[in-house]
Image: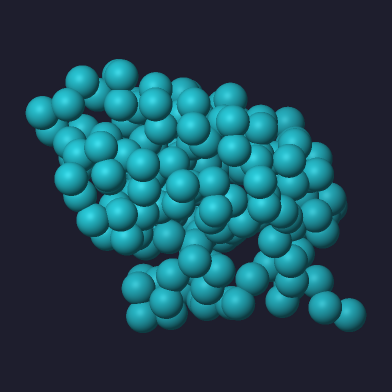
Length: 189
């Protein structure tokens, strides 16, 4: 989400509803949850709420809402490249499956989701698992990320990190090794 797929409408609608339920500012909530697992965002933003119940509401809202989900420029070419490719996402496997399908993208053999890790981004666990399943050292990987938490995770894993300015300002992505507008910059003839 934000790297390969634009699901911003669905995300905004689900998390705005969460914010309203908890008397929070929807814009601040939407900005703060990008790139992090919903279970961690729910616990951080509504510590007195039932985390499983609230996560379930957010997850169901996102799973049911595929309106406006599209592949971002360069996503299809990136997934079809001759390089080893993994998707490492903070969403659940069910949500990744729905969004990859809604965007019309192929699912690579290696997909690391929030269901497969204990610690979400900015922890490097997901990227380390992705590199391991690809059979590649993390230092030989290039991570493409649109969110500060993902950039921090990629850097902590020891990968070269390319920040994509698809969802956040260049200033908020400054820890990346390189900044690009989107993945299409890699596939120009």
